[in-house]
Image (cartoon, rainbow, N blue to C red; front, side, top):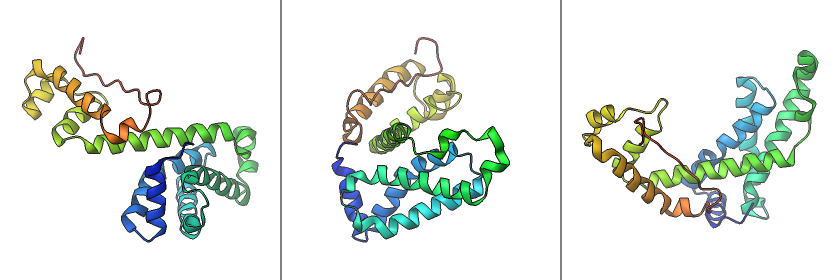
Amino acid sequence: MRDDPYVVALVNRAAGGDQSAWYELVDRYAPLVYTICTRYRLSNHDIEDVGQNVWLLLVEQLGKLREPAALPGWLATTTARECLRVVTATHKTERLGTGLDDSVLFVDDAAIDEEILMAERDAALRAAFAELPSRCQELLSMLISDPPRSYAEIHEQLGIPVGSIGPQRARCLDRLRRTRAFTALGEDEAKINIRGGEPGA
């Protein structure tokens, strides 16, 4: 992972007792912890236990991290170890037989690196989205909902003329791409394609 000054500052603030920085760290990396847990096919209860243990361990270690920018890797490795501990302690490998891939019994560095990158990208996109004006947030949220809202529904709810929705979407995406959080992603990682529900939109 590259040294992300924002993550470094966030870790240092949290280590110094800044509660809002701590909450932001948890919010930023909770999806990473959850994703790794799902690779081990843990129950929801076990996933909650692993998550709690990981965050408790981080509270103990946060001020001792030699490289704050390495936090995502520390979280990924610690989560994988906690998952293995749960799997071993509850004898899930015996109960599941061949249902549990042998590959999950080992920490796969390449897979963890990929999950860290995805977590970082998702966190940056959420931060970039939060920088947008509320009007852009509403419009883009409707366009990326599943299924996307139709232009008629968007017109009805937001009062935007149907012919203006496409151009406004383009302007909002341009603003998103120019946010500080988004530009930190780099061009290769920051590929977004948000299309509306209308043909040719």
